[in-house]
Image (cartoon, rainbow, N blue to C red; front, side, top):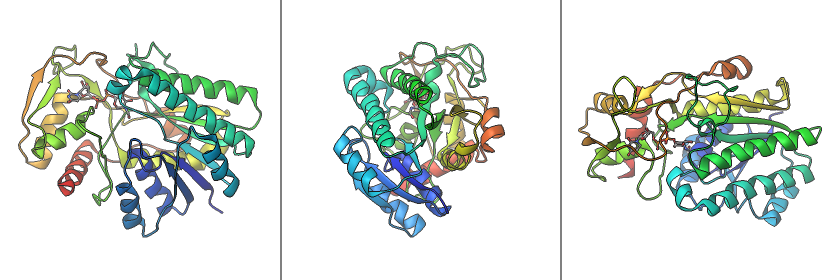
Amino acid sequence: MKKRILLTGGAGYIGAHTAVELILQGYDILLIDDFSKSNKALLTGIEKITNKCPSFQEGDCKDSKFLESIFSKNKFDTVIHFAAYKSVKESVQEPLLYYDNNLRSMTELLRAMNNFAVNELIFSSSCTVYGQPDVIPVDETAPFKRAESPYGATKQMCERLLEDVVLAGEKLKVISLRYFNPIGAHPSALIGELPIGVPDNLVPYVTQTAAGLREKLTIFGDDYSTPDGSCLRDFIHVMDLAQAHVSAVEKIDSMPSRNEAFNLGTGEGVSVLGLARKFIEVTGVKLNYEVGPRRPGDIEKVYANPAKAKKLLGWQTKLTLETALADAWRWQKQLA
Ligand code: WQD
């Protein structure tokens, strides 16, 4: 019998793609989302792809009464916690909003899980917990340096919070998935990234520029000590990322400890300039870009050592940067 799974923030970018994979692989899921940073359109896309209308409840993870109503009506085996604010830039402008939302969502969720004896949690974390690692590619033993933003600090704090709660109890099992740079969209172009306002992240800015919605892409700095001077990142296809969550659901019962973290990346560093040029090569469209000043808070280079996920989750990326960029472009074009 497949597990019953709660996806908090299930109408978001990563949540929706994970929901598709879970449904298609036979899992019984419930999505909750408050739509503060997401859009009901992705629920329609999930239904069109899977031919199943996903079970869904609108509500806020900070609302203990809402969570109690959800947990009292459903017997979950596992929770995947996507619900959080994730803009680095916005977190610098609105730190209190980020600390309150991202931390209180976590503590209220943990209380509800404890009250209803739900003992498996998969947490949406981020490579940002490392800051600028001393050793690249970065593995899970790398220390947490001072986070570059309140957003990153909330991810560090949530992982520490989970460590302490696991230690204080006897049954809770946690897997933290540290995403590198998620990009792309489902190949059907029925779901994808829906940034609110001007995108902070690189790939949606690229596709919006190519679609004529933005005048030009600015490459934030080409004076870093990297091969072409622009920052290096580990761009992972969102469908590979979704599959990693399915693997985590399947393997959480057989982990070496009750609290494990995994880097989810390709293991390869790609430069910002290199991605822009690859986009043009893959899509054949014009992309208006120029080099500008560095963006404050950016780290120079980070990419994953994904060996632990391969060993313990039996997961590794399968999709290429080219595929991710082509899928991102196909999604952007159908938004027009
Ligand atoms: C990538 C690179 C920019 C936009 C953050 C979070 C991470 C995750 C993804 C949530 C950088 C450059 C960008 C542009 C550019 N967050 N860039 N021009 O900062 O690596 O990671 O977002 O899931 O947790 O830390 O991602 O896409 O913003 O930037 O040159 O218009 O692209 O300088 O080097 P980042 P990003």
